[in-house]
Amino acid sequence: MKNTKKILFTFFVLSFSLLLISNDVSSQQTAGELFEKALYMEEAKGDLQKAIDLYQKIIKQFPENREVAAKAQLHIGICYEKLGLKKAQNAFQKVIDNFPERQEEVAIAKERIAALSKALEKVPRKPTFRKIRIPANPGNGVLSPDGKNLVFVSEGCIWSVPIQGKVDPDIAGAPVKLTEATETMRAWDWGGMLALSADGKWIAFNARENEKMEIYIIPSSGGKPKKVPIDIDRGGYGYYYRLSLSPDGKVLAFASHEEEEQSKDKKNYIYTIPVEGGTAKKLTDAMSTQPAFSPDGKKIAYVKRYLSEPGKTQTDAWVMPASGGSPVQVSNFTSGRARSP
Image 1 (cartoon, helix red, strand yellow):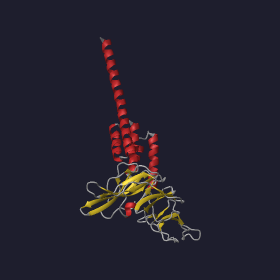
Image 2 (cartoon, rainbow, N blue to C red):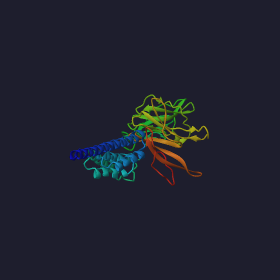
Image 3 (cartoon, helix red, strand yellow):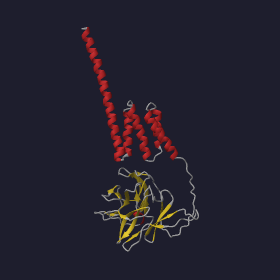
Image 4 (spheres, one colour):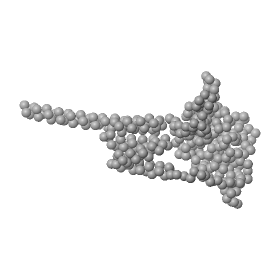
């Protein structure tokens, strides 16, 4: 009888232990699966707020899973960093404070804090100006990324002029004509409709071709302009024609001016398209214009117009992943308007 009780007790202890182990494994798997889902929302879908919610859920539900919880806290900071929010620093600090044994995540958090601290250092608010005399009559120009040349439109041609010439620091160099104006194609200048790639190698510009507005790409060193094939109505005026090139010059961002089938109203959308040709990808909802790639090419800033109250139009700046995803509003003007990001 005693042996039977002993065997039953041993069986109960083993069963209970196996149950605990099984639950622990199940919890780890659940935490891991949740982390993969959050990572997918962050990196593939670009829905940063949804990803943050899932990461926070991991930390709350699985605090004993230190590895996954630490990674979740780290990625909360990364999401805030992508959103451009100061909350990122606090999120990274929590990795250091709450998970000191997780050396890899702590090291990354410290690096991110150091980089953010440097980026947030106060910069002089008062700009300095230097007047440069240019032997030409430039319209709206765009400064090259290295600050050495000004690209502008004049008399239907694209020009590039060195900011600092050889004669005097305040006298520009000789302008160089990059394109020719013809009877059928002329570069168009209205509100600074030029764009340079971040590597400085490519220029995108609008041109009137047989009474239709087209987009061309040309090497900044000169060469034959190449038309970007776009089968979308780009009508409109002024700022609607602003362009932006990805840092490597391979992808073009532009705004459309499309007529809605039912209402017949004109609506604007942001698109991207490979400069070599392909299918244009619509990124935004209606009333979006003036796209601008971030320096790393991962995001696009743009301006969105809406009615703040009956009869009153308001514009604010928004940012979204360049591949598509959830946009984030980064300004909220009660008076005035956002323009030209």
